[in-house]
Length: 409
Image (cartoon, rainbow, N blue to C red; front, side, top):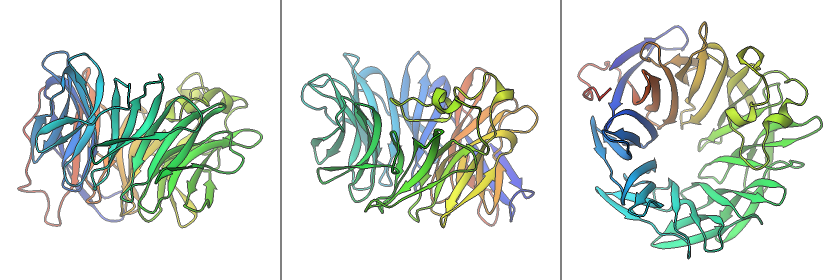
């Protein structure tokens, strides 16, 4: 357990209790999602070669099991404690599942399909993800009240659902004859989204107002713009001064978080790094930008608020990413630190970027934050990976706070 107080970079001192979640007997674990109750789901290695989904709550780590196969993966959890993901059955097929009250249940596949996976769940219990179909394709689906609803595609053979909001609107991605595009599904209707003139579009997050954030390539010379789309078709685009922006998350107020280059990359780099058949991320998008670390461009995390982009920088190194933002506008991600350039998990709040405590010689990244300010992520060190949760201390400090026992290393 680490307790960290950093006053130098924030407006007010912020204390965090950081707890090693442990493992299910193996060397590695990774946290995927945390809800408002502080329940965490993810995946951990076991004492054997298997990977199993876990639920962590109040210092206890529980194996969520499988459908009779070797592996399972928990991807999301809602505020009622319903977790979703995928689990292998006895035949080795990975199938979409939900865990509630300690029980696992297969959600079902499209007719003729053998495999599926669940990626998100809302507080109404609606689950979205993808399923194989009988025609050999893979389609975005919603599991709702025992039904498997085919959300279709935009003309290609592959689509998948990214997120579902409390109104039952679904953000999805689909291949098309010329690449891929993001769309919003609502009551059986699909609406393509993205800025005007984009070659294709990616959507990464959806809020309860129906707003979507993502990235799309356009212009001459080509650049990857960030965008925020609102119902009715209004689109705002923005950059950090460079030519690559990835917008990863949006909160209920419409504030967005992401990362991008602060100056132009070398000619031809965007075309080399962008793949029209895959959504961009830090690795695929920037793959063509440099042969080694010295050639890589400077990449900063940012917040988009009130129509303006605020560059929140890095921890002193050349690159930082931002992957989530909560209702208070707190941003999380990973940033290279000065000196060795090792990535560290951070939380940006009260105007400062806080380097969350990390074991010596470890790399780290954050994956999710709830509205209470609790952050989950993973450390990588000693040949393994360990999930952690960082919780802001109350006004009186962290003395007496529940602490989990050390896990297996």
